[in-house]
Image (cartoon, rainbow, N blue to C red):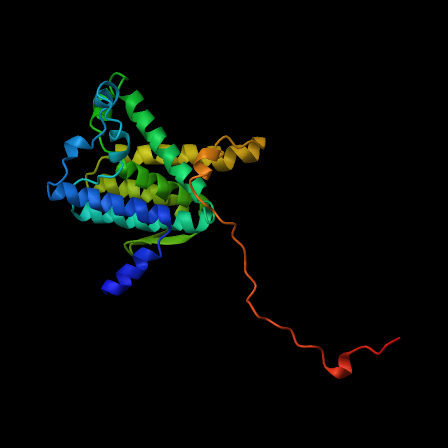
Amino acid sequence: MAQAVEEWYKQMPIITRSYLTAAIVTTIGCSLEIISPYNLYLNPKLVVKQYQVWRLVTNFLYFRKMDLDFLFHMFFLARYCKLLEENSFRGRTADFFYMLLFGATVLTGIVLVGGMIPYVSESFAKIIFLSNSLTFMMVYVWSKQNPFIHMSFLGLFTFTAAYLPWVLLGFSVLVGASAWVDLLGMIAGHAYYFLEDVYPRMTGRRPLKTPAVIKALFADEPVVVARPANVRFAAPPVDEVPPNQ
């Protein structure tokens, strides 16, 4: 069993493995009181006035207490982050990292701007960890890129992947979780999908082209189908060799 888990972990692509590891270590560290969540949550005032810039990153790593909801989000993180990196972004690690960076930036911006809008500022002020929203963004992007895959929800009913975010949003509402968290992920995911997939087809321009600085961080190799080594083709039979003219 332990060996199977180790092999599964080693076979994960680099970004998925790194994010999953950081999320689990951070959440366990907080549960054991080795790390304090008060040093991790998103606080714009502390970021600007006290230069605690790490909060812009650490708020995406903490998934609250270790319960069924934590396992639920770890499953979706491991599954859909891995599916995206191995399929849609195969051989494009830098592009995948840039997608996550774009999503994190959009989510942070929404919370900061929402916190300044009357009547909704209190709701946004309660959102101090965006890890669940970033995970939901990945689910949304995957569903948009694989809309016709048939899925089943707890064996109760079947649907296509295009409706997966809405099914999960409805489930969150039923169990009493905040819908805001999932909605933010859907907004960020749709922004990425539109700018990366829809807008380029409409205009021929790609606004989310990965910067060269980020590409330089990852040694992506082109995906090619290799021909087996030492393959030799037999000569045609004598009776099939055309006679000399």
